[in-house]
Length: 55
Image (cartoon, rainbow, N blue to C red; front, side, top):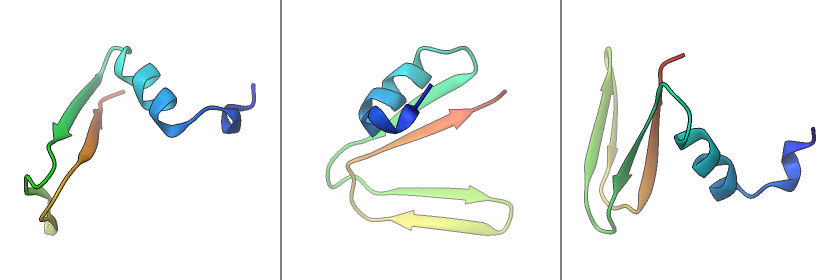
């Protein structure tokens, strides 16, 4: 199957339906911080979709 034909939003919506996937939505102008170990990502303005995948 050629997944390149699907838009990113279509792929995300399919992943969200699956077990082990959590969708976190960052609203426009909402800031967020993601920290993993000693790596830190600061984002001062959404919108963004963060997928937490545990598989």
